[in-house]
Structures are given as structure tokens and as C-alpha cells.
Amino acid sequence: MSAWRWLARTWPRLGLAAVVLAAAGQTLLWVFLVPIYQAPDEAEHLDYALAINAHRGLFLVQNSAFRSLPGSVHPYTLYLQKRAHTVDVAFHPSVKMPAGYGTAAFYEALDRDAPPSACRIDTPSQLAALYPFGYYALLAGWIDLVRLGQEGVVAVFFGARLFSVVLLAASLLLSHGTVRLLGCRPGFSLLITACIGSFPLTSFLSSYVQPDNLAFTLVSLCFYLTLRARRRECSSGPLALLGLALGALLVTKTHFWLCVALPALAMLGTELGSLRRWLLGLLLLLLPSLALGAAYWWTVRGTPNYFAPTAERSPSLPLAFLHAVKDFHLGQTHKSFWGLFGWLDTPLTVRDADTTTAVWWLIRAFAWPLAVLALCRFGRVAYRLGRVAWKGRRWLAVRAAFSNPVVNSYFLFTALMFALYIRTDNRFGAQGRNWFPFLLPIFLVALVYAPKALPRRRGRVALSGVATVALLLFSILGNYYARVSIAQRYYLPCAAGQTEQAALPLTKQR
Image 1 (tube, rainbow, N blue to C red):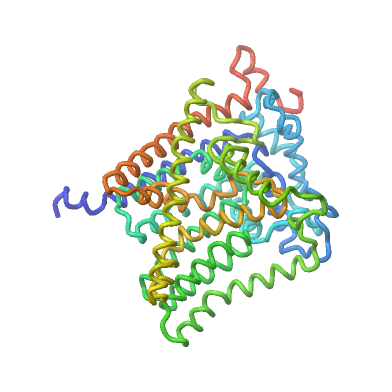
Image 2 (image 1 turned 90 degrees about the horizontal axis):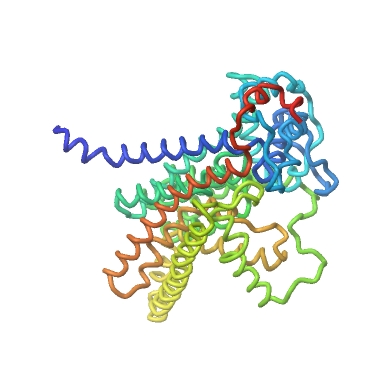
């Protein structure tokens, strides 16, 4: 085989490896750049995993209200918060990390003064009554692996962050495989994988302890296995694997399970032929979710629903809907999706204020028309499917409507987010990171689905190409300037005389 022929056959794999390694390496920079616990709720997330690790099992929080439980229970949590001055820096944009943070002397002092790691914890934290246990139990096992190689609070903390980087690599591989199964060409598949991997929100979330990282991996795995099961004519193997992935997703983030499971079941239900195959497929798909869901229900039985609507008066339905539209497309949620980091106090700054303003207007210049085109495309497809069903070909219309579970999951999730926002008056505090596990369908809708609303093929290809290049450029440049913004937000500029001060233990500096 000639070198050119070998290269022609292997370049997609080499390109994918390069994209995944570049994204993982880029995220590693964020792991050590973002200060300890200067990411939203990271202390509570890691505390829950550490508590499960110390408890050597899951907690029962039956009949326990969220507010009745302590916020943190592991000694590492309070220790790291104190030594890293978490409360002093978070939500105070003008306050920097103490001089010397991040040096070898700082980490040595952090390990030297740490409380003992061997402790027994029998009291759960608040997150045990709020979130399913899947991510935290898996992270607790990962922490044991970290301790086999290196003991100490520094190794445990950054090892927990590195787990998110490992999950990102898996998510990118699965996302690429999903795009290929949808029929996209190798070059475009690599481009959209690169956009996801280098997107600033991706690097930020994948660099700290956050259950949405596992949700992203499991959502991507469910997408891939659903399409794989269809390609293999719904054989038992892919269906069983998909059932396990759905079960794991249920005990990681329940609302993601709902938005992924329904489109997957709908599509596969149209592919299964006989009643016997349909019942067997349904059993393989739902049995793991039923078993794991029952285990989760048992751990939180009798616990009040934190996300239930409050007794306070909410705005009227039309006004609440307009509030949601404004927030999702103009407000905090929109900004935190494209470039708002830390405790939502570190905005992305590209060179200077004028350039940053221009970038934001360019984002809106692409995002809003593409959103309108996506709605037009959705309406047109619904109309055509309705006509097909009206002409008596109902089964064909049903199969076509459920043929793309990836995009359908995103549409269902968007509808769910609007419903939750209106029903709870945004009690959950919508942020851009809520959409993180659905980055693949978001980008597919923007780059493939929406341009198809244009009447001419040349216009569709041109819009898709320009939008893809623009998104990739923003992801790469935005990621670089996001790191610059974080460094300026948290760290003092280098000055003469700081080297000696940085060598001192942090407790003597402040």
C-alpha cells in the first residue's frame, strides 16, 4: 500500500486523535488555571463524592429535607475553602488569589497541614437530597484509584478534576461517532468535534468537578448506541448496552434521561417489527433504568422535591414565557453559554472592550437568524409530515418524525427548560451549562438543520460553511482569551519582590 493511499484511509482517525488530544490538553490548562473551588458549586460536588468514598457506600436521606442537612461534611472541604480563601474571592471580582497561590511551596504546605484522610462519615450533605448518586459514586471510586498512585489532598482534588478531562475525551469520541452515523462526511465530523472540544464552555465545565460532565458522556453514549442499534436492526447487544447507558443516565441527571430516553424509545419502537421483538427490546431498554431508578428512589424516599413550585405568586404565563425567551437568548443564560466563567463573575474579554462588544454582536448576528431558520425548518417539516399522514401514510410520517433522536432530544430538552423556567419561576437558576450535554445537537441544528430552511442548495451550503468556520474560530480564539480573562480575574500581575513572598506558606501571607 502506498503512503498516499494509507494516508487517505487513516487521516480521519489521525485527525480525530489530534482533535481529542488537543481538546484534552487545552482543558488541562484550565484544570490548573482555575483556582481551587472557584467554579460553581465545586466544593459541594466534591464533598459529596468524598463523603461517599469515606462512608464506603451510598447514603440514605429518607424523609430528610434539603435545608435540614449540612452543606459540607468532609474535613477536606472546609480545609480547602479556608486555605484557598474561597469565600473571600468568589463573587468579589476585584479580589485576587493570595500571592503564592499555585506554587510548589503552596501545594506542599497544603498537603502538610491537611487533616487526616482516613475518616468515617455517616451524615450526608445537602446534595444527597438534591441530585442522584451516579456521578458521585463513580467519582468516589475514581478517588480510590488516585490514592493508589498519590496520597494527599492536592492529588485528590486535582485527580477529581482530571476525571472530568477523561470524560471529555470519551464524550468527543462518542460525539464524532454519532455524527458519522448520521451520515455526515469525515471532514465535517472532525470540524464539529473540534468545535465542541475547543468551545470555551466545554473547557470550563470539563476542568472541574461537575456531574454534567458524566451526563455529557452518557448522553453522547446514548445517542451513539441508539443509532448503532438502528443500523444493526435492533439486535439484542446494542439494545442491552443502550439500556445500561440509559440506566446510568437516570441516576446521573434525571431530566436528561427523560429527554434522551423518549426520542430513543420512539425511534427504536418504529424499527422493531413483531410484538415479541418489541416486548424484548422494551425490556432490554428499560430494565436497567427501573432497577437503578428504584435504588435511587429508595435512597431519597420521602424527601421533599426541592424544585417544586413555591407558594409565591408567579408572573402570568405569557410574561413568564417572555422572561424565559429573554434570559435564554439575551440574559444570563445566553451570556454564560458563550462566555461567563468562575462564579459568573468572569466575563470573556477579547482584547479590549470594543472588540468584545463586536464579538458579542457577531454571535447574535449568527445565533438569532439561525434560531429563526430552525423554527421555520421545524414548522415546515411538521407541515409536510402532517400532509403525509393526512394522505393515509401515517406510519411513514411517524417513522420520519422519530428518525433523528439526536435533534429530537434537543428539541424536547429545550421545551422542558422553558416549562421548568415558567413552572418554578427559574428557581433552579438557569445557566448556559444546563445545555452542556446537548452541545452536539445544538451545533447540528445550527450548522445543518437550520440552513436547510433556505430555498436554494447553494445558499444552504454557503450558510452552513460560514457558520461552521465562524463557530470554530470563536471556539479557538474564545478559549484562548477566556484563559487570559481568568488569569486577569484571579491572579496578581507579576511584580518584583513577589518570588520571596510566594515561597512562604499561604497561612503566613494573609
